[in-house]
Length: 471
Ligand code: NAD
Image 1 (cartoon, rainbow, N blue to C red):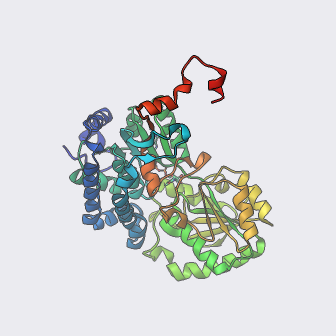
Image 2: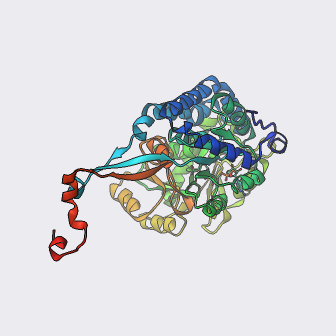
Image 3: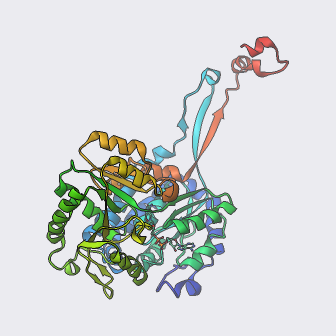
């Protein structure tokens, strides 16, 4: 099989790539051959994938550095190490998850067997986003393989080094027909989406999510949409401000704020705002030094267009901390804004950069109102030592997930399903939930054929009588 290499996101496709229809047709033929269903084959492919990660760790970190200036620490923590751990756990568990599951039966089925079989869907499309360009594409891919599917992978063109790594390296390790990479941007993805898939797993923004959903709908293809939105932080006066600042700013600064569940804005009292700002100045200096642009630990904004969009947000409210930018370097300093109006553009769209506005509220009810007047977020962060405030927020808001007294960390716990609700997405994955995403749960009742069983159930046959009805 020719390796579909992307040299630069613009030229590749037309010259070296197979057409979407060719890719999908050959993946379908491979699926129909039945080999992806064999548990041994799945295991072999997953072990090859693990080998790919382990043998190419440095190349993966280099690609992340090129795309986003990711430090080694962030690259290992949020991408390469994360991928390896997730895959090891998948390899250890997927055979058990793939077993037909016995379910409880009533008296009427006491002699029968009731089972849920885990059928692979068929040919799955995974569309990745640029902000965590390796793991957002590859975690769903490994889950889809473990579940017995053939997979077409479309990495994001906005992170070309990572996309190129996947396109060049994956075919060296995995079956070239069952698992295929297609690179490209809007045009290529639009073409790809005209094909019939059996499942689509999309990560990206809500506008494109709607396009993907509409394309899937034409074939009644089920989807997972991992989208974004504005994830609020509620911070009340009961919390140790230095702990809160570290946990909130870490969530905001990692990947330069380009994280789907980055804390988007803070809701707190005016008194807490003053303490938060003082503490933030110290923490940011401790982390990134006097000149944060020189810090090796801060990522860059992914493209000039993204830089232009985010840097405009600095014009809203008043800069309380930070505010430095450098367009050539696509650098935006971690920044805190105060006196922002809820009608300002920065409060209308997901920030997706290292800028944190603070909105003042007086109490927990104000916070609930503010949150519920907006779209259901992907994550809600509650910082409070007051259990009643935490419970009130939990009971009166809806979000994809919640993390109390920290940010982002709920994503790392594989026993928690990760996903959005409403405009922040549909479906969820991570750990066993990733495997479950990619199987159709086939309800199966296996009836006993014995005469005794037949006799026990004979009341259902005509002629119908009152006696049978009361049986
Ligand atoms: P992106 O630009 O990489 O787009 C995502 C994918 O959609 C890419 O593969 C791209 O090629 C494809 N695409 C773009 N335009 C398209 C079109 N018109 N038709 C078909 N396909 C198209 O990423 P993005 O959308 O900028 O990603 C950022 C967004 O994703 C944020 O909103 C963020 O919150 C969200 N996100 C969500 C998660 C999650 O797990 N829920 C994770 C990461 C990012």
